[in-house]
Amino acid sequence: MGDLGAVENQEFRTGGRRQRGGPREPKSYYRLLGRDPSSLRFAEFAECCRSRGQLSEAATLCARGLMRHPNYATGHVVMGEIYYDQQLPDRAQGEWMEALRLDPHHPRAHFRLAELYAERGETRKAAAELEAALVFNPSFGEARALLAKIETRSEAAGERKVQLEAAPQDRAQERSAGLTTSQFNELLAAVQTCEFVENALLANPDGLMLAGNLPTAAGPEAGAALAVELAREARELLNRLGAGKLKSVLIRGRDGSLRCVALPYATLIAALKPEAPLGGADAEIEEAVASVRRLAQGEEERGGLSAAA
Amino acid sequence: MDYLPPPERPGFDEALETLTETPGVRAAVVAAEDGLPIAMRLQSDQDGEMWAAVASSMGRLAQRVLKRLARGSLEVGVFDTDRYRFLVCPLRVGFLLAVCEPQANVGLVTLEMQAAATALETATEAMADGARIAPAE
Picture 1: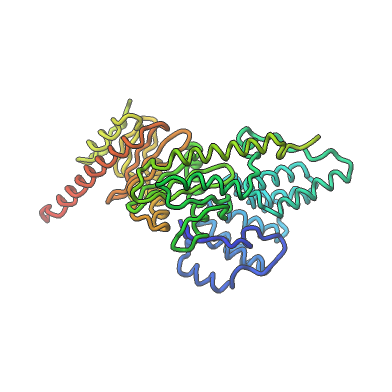
Picture 2: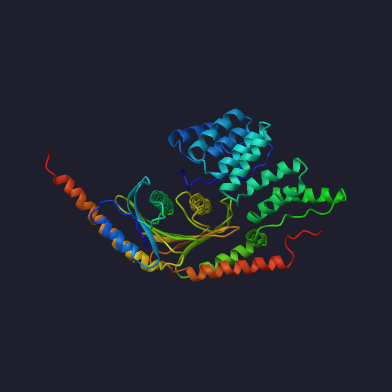
């Protein structure tokens, strides 16, 4: 299914709508795609072209990539951004909604929809999308800034403060996760106390590291991207099959095991030592996840994200 | 429990039958690397082709992850959802998948899968030997 080790450049992932220099020269992507036409990095390449104003080329690249990888949510996000730049907002909206159908946790897709809704004056819908983006990526500065702008504008117009849409039960719980880096570090510290755990990390839904470390051949940052891709691919596969909601993945290799837990707001992956029993770190991981949920509930009780009337 | 009649694969049938008799196991499928079904033991309302595709996708995903993290070859993968527990292990011909209830005993099913995998590899070798020594027409 492509290059799991690829790490999307942070600028690419959180880049604004305005054009800026792409992460790499296009010719390096042509070489890359020439070597591996099925690479998932078509999206990064298309983004590079889009940022240079080469919209036609970006659209062609992205469309070709999506023909090979129709379930790649980030590819649909990039396609939507291309359509938007081509003054096709309805098509852009369709792509971003498809991205969320494939991956309901995709912060950038939520953010792009929020921008579109805000432009149309649909502030409630925009605010709901921004709240969702911030649940899954609390450090998403652009989303936070836009939400503040929307709320300020609403107050200035004498309107009621933005009412958040009623969320489904699980999203209401997820919303409470306005956790800090130190809290993520505490979660990981609890996991790493287990004698069988070699490394562990937490990644946000964009594949960026929140805390911890997981060395890979492609470097430590690739570990975060890998954890998220594992959870995403498994989730997408199970969604297509109607096989239920992914809870966790355990993979035992000859030289060590991995435990991956899909949390609403992050992905936890723990690499176990070769001598570890298969269930070696289960108790520590379950306790760590429970403790984070307790922390998150504490945030909710302190009035984290509820909107005032 | 009703089962669909399995295809004629000497040795495969017995291995899968034993595996599906393990408590919590609802179905067992042998799939090729590309997701095509080779042998299966299912309940009558289950889609064997779908489970074969699942086996291949999960097995290949697990193998890629282990390769990236330099954890050696795949021994077994366990994928938990709120409806099922899937266990997948590699075979020479592809992958073996056990579709289980969510609370199935992973340790027990893993042991039975290892036994089934050994039996399936033996059956595969026997078939390959039979093909090699078959007299030419």
